[in-house]
Amino acid sequence: MTKKRLNPLGLIVLLLTNIAFASDSIPLPTKTQIAWQDAELTALFSYDLHVFDGERYNQPKNRITPIKDHNIFNPSQLNTDQWISSFAAAGGKVALLTATHETGFALYQSDVNPYCMKALKFQDGKGDIVRDFVASCRKYNVKPGIYIGTRWNSFYGVYDFMVHNDGTQFAKNRQLHYNRMMEKMTEELMSRYGELFMVWFDGGAHGPELGGPNILPIVEKYQKNIIFYHNTQRADIRWGGSESGRVSYPCWGTFPFPFSHSTRQKEIFNDDFKMLKEGDPNGKFYMPAMSDAPLRGYKGRHEWFWEPGDEAYIQPLENLMNMYYGSVGRNSTLILGLTPDPRGLIPAPDSIRLQSFGEEVRKRFSNPISTTSGNGQMHQIDVKKNTVIDHVLLMEDIAYGERVREFIVEGKTAKGWTTLCSGSSIGHKFIAQFNAIAVSALRLRITKTLADPQIKVFSIFNTLTTK
Image (tube, rainbow, N blue to C red):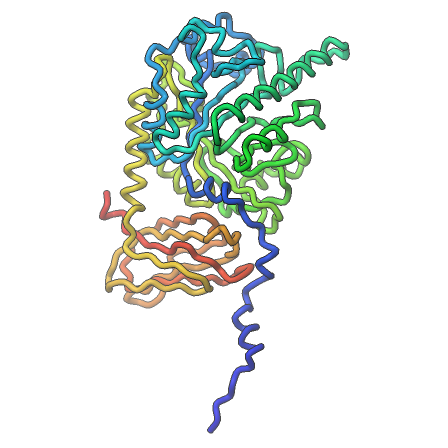
């Protein structure tokens, strides 16, 4: 009896049944975007004049009311090393500073904006917090970034990017002056402090096509490898649709446009920001989501700047871990808002909570029971009989793009194979938590994919033994 041989072409067709199309059509991240997602935890340090006024922050008021005396800025114990070391204890890898925010005051030595640290009695007008911040980042191996506020400036009377426009030549001249000043400030910030990892224009940079400054060419001239967020031409990352520290699932790293706001707002903002929250699995541009939230955001508070009496509103550790699962564990990057106080320090309760957060993440996920990797649609881990697990962690090698579209993770129990979790998006990282179960093997079955799956990590954990 002769064995029937399978036609080689038939074998190829069988292997590729669940592969949708060629890998060369899959959007790929840049090296900097990969570094952004690998960082996983980022901080935004928000500091401005109103931190020193002893009052609750009132955003509508602050956007239209100049600070009475800029010399209230007087941090007697300013220590940016303490800021960054507190964040590094949480496992943070990227940190940004609000070089300017809604008051319009610049936390550095600007040659084009007189409303800056040169005008202070503090440090005899020679201080430069941007300089100190970047130096501290490099000291603690944290990648530095800068937030530049162009949208609101109460000192210059700029509201939603624009000066009050009454149609006169005076108003037009003021707008031109403000635009040129923001361009020059961007040049100063991009050229003076060495290589920066990220620049953040909150609300966008509102380019010249919308009557604003021409920011993008300046950033690209001085910072070739920077994460740019964002204007109507370019966005390397996107807002995740809320300030909850979480994104929806699935959350794809791809998007239909090379920008994330402004020119197609109806589509992007439709259905409670669904596109920003979920991305687009068929999108042609790689643009992963960020999940931002202030550390002081518990029990209805939501404060990006220090305010008196807010210690009770620091997020509990359990909430921070839920944010971690809902951001990093869903293919996003978590951005925590941190609040230096009037002394120039991260308050002790905040610093302690950050350290606890970092310790808990490391405790749960630093030591997998077992791990494997490789390409292909089937991956198996064999373990000792009755090995108890309660987490699965998956990572694609996103240098090859997001390829997986559907997957199932099964555990082999005494009763046979049972589904532990399933999903669609893996991307940079997918974390599933479930009730502890005893298994002797696990398998990852990828049931739908765009091209040969590249699984960087398939790990299992028992976090009950680490608590």
